[in-house]
Image (cartoon, rainbow, N blue to C red; front, top):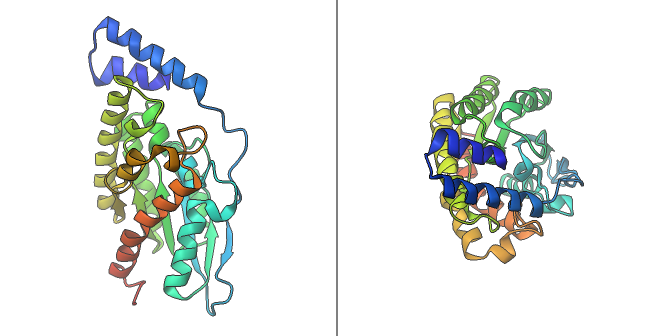
Length: 259
């Protein structure tokens, strides 16, 4: 989080010394209340919809702790399993789910995740990335370029790619102005750069800031987990719910969904 402060003070905006001290103090306070990821997310992989016949649809979930489902207690509470289950029921076919995503991932980690995904020849890849790039002050242009290259590599093998762009991290309950304003500014800039990169690479962006943030802002107690940074199971369910319609629309546009 102090990376965010250094970025804000040194490259994004110019603030008075008094405000800089306030921001730095807020960042240190946030660091004290956010626990380390000492327990990995539940294993969100495997074959879903075993009762259906035919070749499974292979789905890969790439990205950070949001994609990995940090804070969930059971595999069925993770975002990937929720989406795979919904796809299986909607398509009437089995889904083989892989999850290269891991907690703490930056956009610069996507090449390794794409390498892992390509070993399984995915039909569909869903990527959620960007939160750590915002808080650790990764250069936003570089982060978007890494994402665009990941999408290009997946598209090159015929994989359909859907990307949930960076949500507005200003919604996180522990953040207070002016730190919240800086988080919002960087989130918005990254989401815009991600959208352009994903479209140019042939993927389908989903604006999580528009589709998801209103629910987290309206009901933070229910939507956030115990650390007040990562989603609760209800939060992940809402994320799956807003992702599914544009995911199905993208698959329909690609000719993978016929009903």
